[in-house]
Image (cartoon, rainbow, N blue to C red; front, side, top):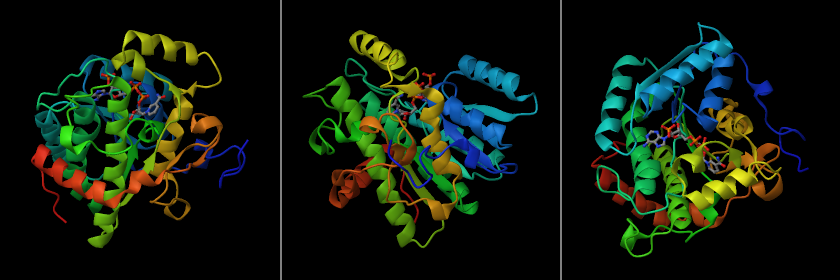
Length: 317
Ligand SMILES: NC(=O)c1ccc[n+]([C@@H]2O[C@H](COP(=O)([O-])OP(=O)(O)OC[C@H]3O[C@@H](n4cnc5c(N)ncnc54)[C@H](OP(=O)(O)O)[C@@H]3O)[C@@H](O)[C@H]2O)c1
């Protein structure tokens, strides 16, 4: 087993101190890693606001969390569908009005390996639209609130960033010519990661005190492929989930919770955190190897410009 800066067992929630008074906003928290992250944060006394698209699933998630942690668990949800920029806008407006602070905004929600090219309400290829453009706008609209709290933004990436085409396909962002469920998913996760490193640079240049961290959950037994993947991928991942190649959803939540709570001096913004064991899919949580194409400045700058144009949102640094 590799040794991380947190020792052989890697980062675990045992490191988290009392989170009373802290507020965490998590996208896609009614299931999977987001749900587990919520549970861990709530168990340490935090307030969690989930931004979910499905009301029924959210009410069930809240009931399950309160059932496990007690009725006083400070968990709530606001309806937000990342596949509609207008929905992102109204959820952000709601949060800006009602939440006094955001200690960490955790961009966790995603769809993956969508079998056929589909589009969001605003006409974006669905994986890029939900995973990247939706979060790009959300982060922009909530940024001031995070800054007022000297808070953090956590971007949940994927080892997929180093699969697929390993760059951003600027001449065909919707994949009209070469749509491929996996490559197009990987493209969207690379876009999220590149956005995060570019955001760090812009925050530094503006002399602001907001940290942005990038992580990934390895391979975790969640509903990701079951919900959005094609039949073949669902069967394959279902079978893999019965092997040690795939870890629990709870362990998949550790990297994002670490990035949201660990002391600043123990984290590095230009790093990439996740399981450090076999293929970086499972194992102790710590710093993972990051491929240089994820920090290609020219690509990141162009992606930023396109993302501002497509979401009709200009960051105000
Ligand atoms: N599991 C893995 O092995 C793995 C590997 C690499 C990276 N990741 C990353 O880990 C993160 C967490 O995923 P997970 O594995 O926990 O998957 P999950 O169990 O499917 O959870 C994903 C969450 O995102 C929500 N979501 C999907 N589309 C949305 C939309 N349009 N608007 C708002 N919310 C939406 C889902 O809501 P619904 O319940 O309504 O569908 C769900 O709450 C993702 O960023 C994913 O890319 C996962």
